[in-house]
Image (cartoon, rainbow, N blue to C red):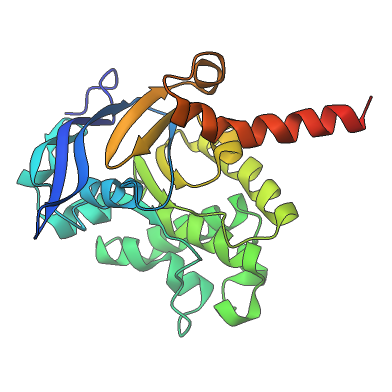
Length: 259
């Protein structure tokens, strides 16, 4: 039975070492509370995406413990685990030969939901992401804009009613206006449905705007985890300060324009 007071995700001293001794993730510990969004940020190659893959066992950890809903993920069937956790990849990742309805319905069908329940869930989610089922369900990905395809990607990740969504640079391929709108819509969707999320992003401004918690990574390790306000007020290192300098500079420039 799931303890509602327990973290959705509890990572304890997790590491990942590849052949040749390359340490992609080093002694990472963090927790994700229910309903929160945790942003993993840092420069390319710092271990963000590898850590994301360790959570749902797209790769297996070399050491440490990852608890999802109180269960050790290493003890779970990896295929069944992935069906319990939503995944939104960089770009939309939709199957081009499937309709919107068929793309969103993939996980419910794998979970052996009956057709009525699947259709109802897909229709509800398409409405929630601003793509009314009557208009969009039978379209193919090629008939959609980039923002619409990403909305379908979010609906697909949520279709199996997961408690946790993992997202790898989900907004990076979008133009600034579409990106801003989808960021706001995603947070509203999260508040409405109550799921938790881990998001990989290179964009510190995006992390500051969207996340409840931010974990800054460098060379496979977490340098600092805290709220956006905590990072802005008390960066733990020069590296963290450097990552924060770009959004600080942008905010100063905007203020000066309005002076």
